[in-house]
Length: 298
Image 1 (spheres, rainbow, N blue to C red):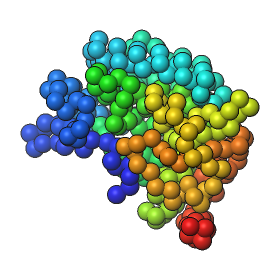
Image 2 (image 1 turned 180 degrees about the vertical axis):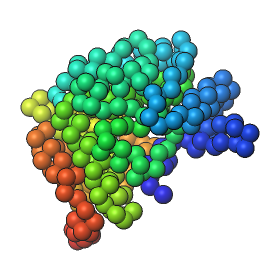
Image 3 (image 1 turned 60 degrees about the vertical axis):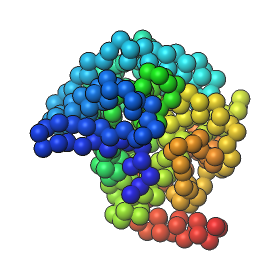
């Protein structure tokens, strides 16, 4: 199982049609029956969705909108200092609401005229090949639930804040959108699970947790950093290594902690040339060569 599977609470459908999201024992919402029922309701919306129809509407509560407003305001301030230029440009193009959670269909309607991307509803974990492959069609699988109100600035799993403030703001930029689409084509091109895992790790250390050097210092360009209130402040203290596809494709990571090792591009052009070039050309043979290179330097 890829590490990505740990990111999402399992969603179980009962024979009676019931839907239960199985939160971990240390999840902030585990002891909140109302929150757990909300999670079940929102997961059920995605499971009942029919492809080709609009994303289902989640009726968010005032408390849920308040969590979005708190995090959106805090991240906006941090992005001004710590997000890369391309991410800030995407954010200003997209113009997400700051005071309420947007519906996925609303996000699609904002993104489509800019880069052609649309959002699809996911109850939880989407199989790796399906998740990445969809990017080739400029579609992005997204959860709709929001983190527990007791810790608005923390989530143990990707929620709608991560999916939208992290990913949609970058998908509004043409350069980013091209990288995501290329990653989708790469996922469809490679054949073995080993090669797919390698592609997923390069994606993780670039479009999720990538860093780029700009004239005034290192900046976050990965959606995982851009949507994390805490980690966006701490990534400059990580072991920032130069872009190295062989190392990126085998580097392990622990989602329970800030990433101790990150890969920092010398420029945004280098991200597009090196990471984009990899996604454009990768096949099982190239992964085999890169794995051999990684072993050689281990």
